[in-house]
Image (cartoon, rainbow, N blue to C red; front, side):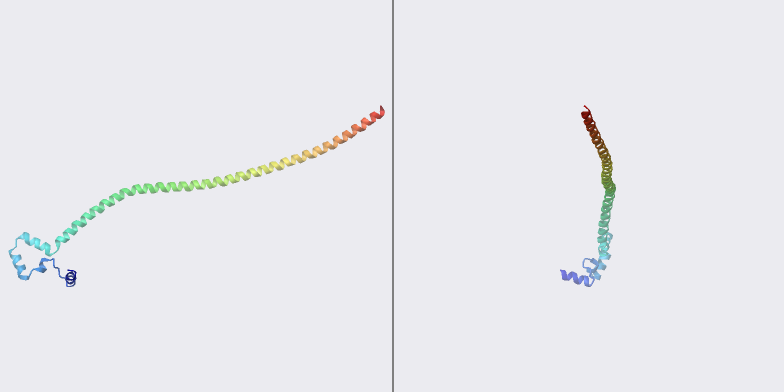
Length: 162
């Protein structure tokens, strides 16, 4: 069967076409004796128009299916576009939040160093105060010793005078 099909294709023989099968005499008889309906059916089959009609109907059906699918897809696209827009907004919000967190971390570090600087200045100020108090206490101790030695010497003189 395959070889026959290949030969028919090679020699361009349309075995399914009734015109190719009928002899010239048989075709004349059929054309003169047939009624209009038979002639029309014969013409459709000979010209292979019934296949074209079926293909056209199939194509129309496929076009209608595609229109429905396109309409459905377009309806779904608006929802998907809205989801994409929301996702983009969330993404941008997340980026802004990340930048704010980074800024917060940087400011927290700066506050920490500012506190260290403030404490260092306060310690330096307190150390200066302690040094001044130590100096004053040293001066007071010296005056105290001088006063005690004066008191002792006065007490000695008073003892000697008694």
